[in-house]
Length: 513
Image (cartoon, rainbow, N blue to C red; front, top):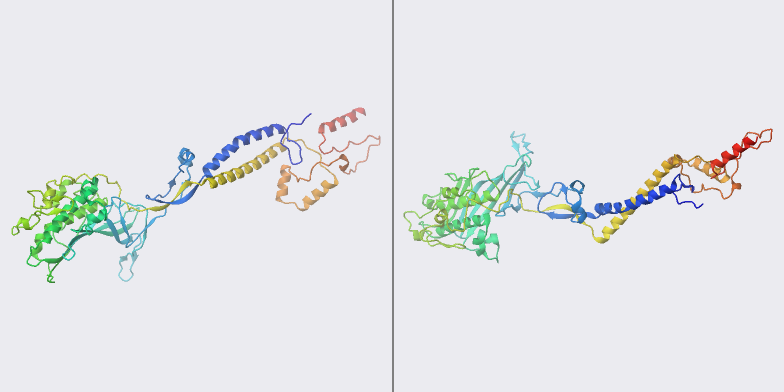
């Protein structure tokens, strides 16, 4: 009878129901192999690579842009290491989300690291470079504003200081400032520099959203300052002026400046700001208020009043800035021409007056559009992301991974079948040939954990095969003598001999007696 193919032990004997085990093994691995290939395609088909990302990611998942990555449940998506934070310290220059102004960091202080000075008994802080992970600047506010005029450069500059006190999740106090310079020359002017050389700056009037409103207000208010200070109104024309204010969250200029200086063209500089120069106070305050509210809008400060969010504030803080009684309107700002908005319309003596009347029509304040809810630094972070491997690397990884897992699964399955079949197999006689005795003696000398484990599961070495002929099998010596009646003793069962035949011969001998 032809023997069915079956799973066998190391001696070549089939396991009980070995053919069913073989069929089940083939079916099991036929189903498992495609699953292992798909599993390795998912786990080995992508790799981590560094990538520049605009948003900081502390942790999360980023499934590869593949058919398997898009279909994986969120819980099975591979995790990602956090991004590398940006450094923030003195001298750094950056923009915020609204992207209106460039800010220069003046200082950074870690509020959790106060050091006690043993001499003065006061807490001291030290500047340090800190990590930035996309924290918001909405808690910041304008705390200083300085106006500078230069006759030699024909420029008006406003430097706005910003203080960020920090908060529990980011206990870093940051001081920074931004400077806006206004001039007739476009390459010096803040508006011209905002767009850059070589671009059509006349498109400013058609710029939508909050940028159009902010840049439009700054442009027309600075036109008043450029026109008025360009004409001689004092006996001796100012060579330079500086007015410095300290502010709080109310964003209101105090009645008294913290510091102010004026230098005449003849080189004289009065100890106090001369009263004759008070005719320029409205011009200076209008420009300062426009700059302060623009910066508060840019950093996302919603606590302070702002003309770009509330149109009623514009009429409160922007003065008409008409000519003093002793100066003719034609010698003040009448007829001045804006670079982008043309000339003053009839009936208006200053651009501030036009702005209060809702002109030019394409400058709309009170409802800024396009602003993001959070204000953060515009930068990039080095973040690891998953991408699909190149084809050759992909095939190699999937093949090696599938082969390794298949080999491991096969070894584990065969071990499981061996352990299970061992309990179902009938006991067999022990081979007592000279070769087997030598092998057992050798294993006894070199016994170890592996040999004990193999003995436990019934696995021997490959040289324990059945002897070639029955003559190699020797009967184990016995101290028993044959019966006196001459009845032969039953012979030792040969290796591989069926137990039933042995039982049958024994019973037959007994019956014959």
